[in-house]
Length: 437
Picture (cartoon, rainbow, N blue to C red):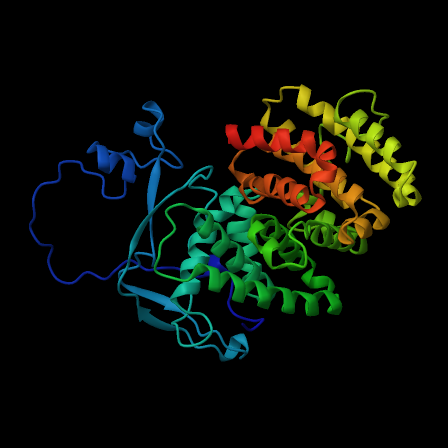
């Protein structure tokens, strides 16, 4: 996909379908809703078409489900442009009709009409961008963007506009959209989303690496947006662990530490650019919770097991490193005893958990990547905390929801029965999360 693809989405428009002769007579409308939710249609009641949930569904506490079309219902002439490497002055604006559409029902949650960007208008499928890509992009702007960290418009409008000038960002958007569609139980069967996901992810990683090495200051917003999207994808695609050297491999360290490097190296741009809200300091909590000596709870159990083991094992050389990571988790363990019903506080707690991984020392990360038994059991305790907090989180954490349980089980399987006592607490929390999830 070329780097220069389109003007801003806001500069493109969809004209109304032309009128073809006098209006035909028909039955008098009885006030039916043609754009209402599928729930109201099934119940045969009139829908007021409110988003994200209509009044009928809110009143009856039903799940409000709206249809999506495999192609936007553009029904007439739409402005298109070729996806080529030619300059903007050489691009020719053409019109092309869009025919055919397939309705697929899926839920739209957590989004509002003002936050969702108008679906971008793409070229005819003669080159690298075809109908499958249109579908993925429309799904991202209308749905996936509304359930990511930050404002929905940040992703549906700002990131998408940047993507038309930065191919690595466009590929990252399409890869995450394909992943999100596979997460949905009503995923349409028209396309091979797994294949599309794999293709766009590989292209995103390849072109992103080249862009990072180029270190162009003007492209820092696109690099930061892509870093976040690749991190979201790495967390959401837990099944990829089966293809790695070990099932308990944790790619989050790679992407989070890469994010940190981008922010540090271009601090001014990161804190003043489009995505500054994602790297801003928290309002309610410190960047990371302070370390503490565990006197009770899972931290104290870990310390006792560590003390008993280290007297007779080769793990002795990493004793201080293990103790430092356990103490850094102690304050997070205490979160499980508190009931947090405030959405903003819970979001900041989860962000603080992510920063725990960001600030892990290179030595500890090396132990995890080397499949050190003690380092992995400590990581399992971390993911148990994250899983517990996610049980009360909103849909914008969907990309992380499955990973904690997966990681606890994968680590437990890897360390084996000899370390069952080390894994007892993480397994208990994972089981509880699964039962309540």
